[in-house]
Length: 201
Image 1 (cartoon, one colour):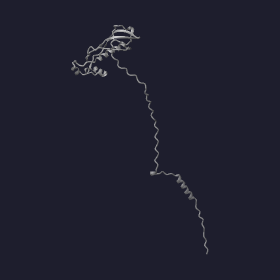
Image 2 (tube, helix red, strand yellow):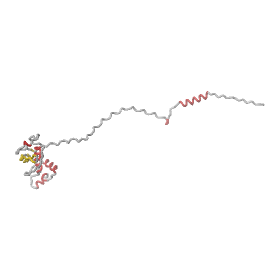
Image 3 (cartoon, one colour):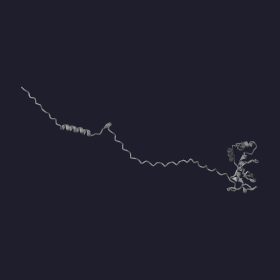
Image 4 (tube, rainbow, N blue to C red):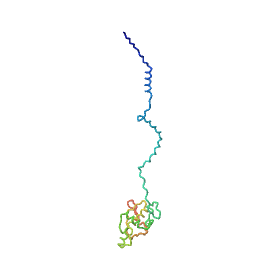
């Protein structure tokens, strides 16, 4: 008894394989959005460019030049105008200087003079102390009146110079006194090309 084996050739269709490859291809091409923590956050939109404000103007440069000092308050001038300069040839012995009248002396002026000169004599500042020494009250320093005389000379000389000033204190100046300074040319002389005038005050 013989047996016969039958060999069957199985033909595998290629169509399903093509579909499978195509599905893989689609899987590679198709992209699905991720969800959850793996999802990518959308990129923030760029803010529109703002126009920058114009730069401020440059600050003015500080000059290294030192400004001129403010002119000091002019002192009281004599009543007669001495704006013009005089010549030596115009001076005569016996000529009077324009007088200088000062306002009445007060205690404030006495205190200011003491602070400016450093003369803090109690006779000029402490009235009870002056009474204790037999004076009716405090009085002005003698150098204050001498300063008024110097003002008279400098106002008259203008561009000249006071070479020497001497004084003798003959009377006390009290608060409330009004002083008038006067002068007269006593002598005119020349020495080594310079011109000098001696003035009695």
